[in-house]
Image (cartoon, rainbow, N blue to C red):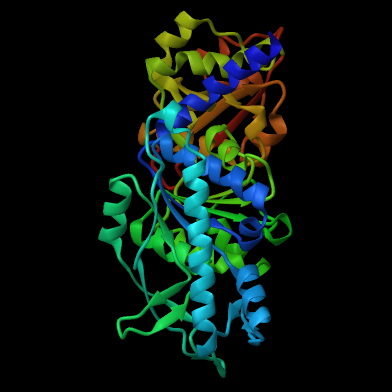
Amino acid sequence: MHMHDSFIDALRQASPYILGHRGKTCVIYLPSELIADGPRLRATLHDLLLLHHLGLRLILATGLRQQFNQALEKAGIHSEFSAHQRITPLEALPLLAAESGRIASRLQALASCRVNLDAQRTLPPLITQGNWVIAQPRGVLQGVDFQHTGRVRKVQIEALRKAVDIGQIPLLTAVTPSFTGELFNLNALDQACSVASALRADKLIILLPQNELPDLPRQLNARALRNLQHQHWLLPKLSEVTGAVRRIHLLNAQSEGVLLKELFTLDGVGSLIFADQYHEIRQATIDDVGGILALIEPLEQQGILVRRDREKLEAEIANFLVVVRDSRIIGCAALYPLDENSAEVACFAIDPQYRNQGIGGELLSAIEQRACSLNLHQLYLLTTQTQHWFSQHGFEEIAPQDLPAPRQRLYNAQRASRVYRKTICAGANP
């Protein structure tokens, strides 16, 4: 019974994300370490095909550094690196092209054998190769001639879109042509970033071994990422992409089921870099009443907030702002005008899982902006638990008798709430 309940809970949690991700374009980078690990590769490919059948539009890029190293070493060809890029001599290209083709064929074979035709009555998805990316020489950088190592010149956007439109999974190949007919070795991660940016993909998902992942918070925005660029070689590359890609996910390639856990649970398991605001602060509606009650009821039971029943909340919903993440309310606050110059901030709550992330400060700023738009210049609040936080945000303690008369008459002396005030809308005429 317990296992059955766990399954139901997991499916209920995943269902909004299954619907939300359907039709989204995702560029996914698989590292060479994963490609070399047979059991892990098969499990990951199984999850990728599941994502495909759930309606995600996938484009794959495979890192092949280990495989290329082994092929070149076996052939006795020496290859050096500079700034995380291989210097590719001309004689290495045929070997690299052959190895790239071998890996592509292996992925296609694995994709075919993962589909039970009798059960699904469908053909396996096509993992297709093509001239999705046009290369140009990397050239000479800081005195280093990269020879036949290239960089992205052009992404064949329409061709890629047509491929995913008809249900194919394009595979970005390592050895790619230029407009002059020459071949160049392109870094797979560079390709993934360039393609995701050119397509303005919904997601760029990068799997790396745990020891190669940068040490990042669970979530951060593009501005925070720019401040951390010096900490890891990958971060400047990702910073260039954030203006075009809505979400970048950094995941541990060695973790079982990491793609499914990241995409189909509320907070995921990796690091998420978002170009826009990951949560939304907006006016509450009548449909939000249930979510607000679920948020504030534990705080009411602890005596932190004054109890509100559903009817009262429904009647006062126009006074509320809510913080929403993936359709779930994780914060709320209300603004009640007291007179022509002042208002009370009430029912201020942030889900405990999301505290210390700056969300409370954003919500308070939104409340203050609303008050300013109503030409209100004094904010009051009553609290029994969070006085230090509000003091840090500019509120000063006052005596209960200093409350505006309408609110002073309703002050509950038995609750013994402490009273705070803040002047806002600097420069405005009261």
